[in-house]
Image 1 (spheres, helix red, strand yellow):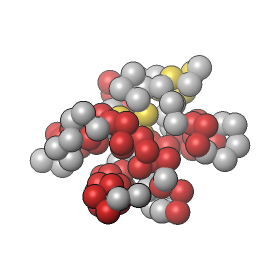
Image 2: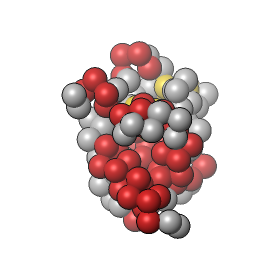
Image 3: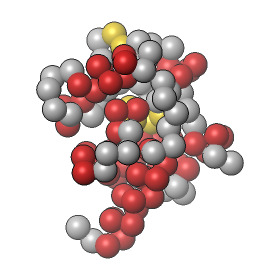
Image 4: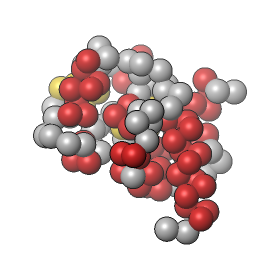
Length: 111
């Protein structure tokens, strides 16, 4: 991995650490906050590599529609959903319910 990717990943992790309990954000929202609006996929790659960072809340990062698109990167078949549900987030058919209410936008919240 190139050093600039490592630096970007670390910046992604710093944002992901700030997602409040019981809230979710999207790959694109993190990318936009970091000034890389077209890098949602890179944020996803960072989340996929976040396993060695215990304080990164990767389970709270979903796609823009609230789908648990990263769930196959968690151990077990439903760990991502279970972690979210333990925080009071309702998930039906891999879809966050009440996304508008639960969505945490770092561009707004961290300004």
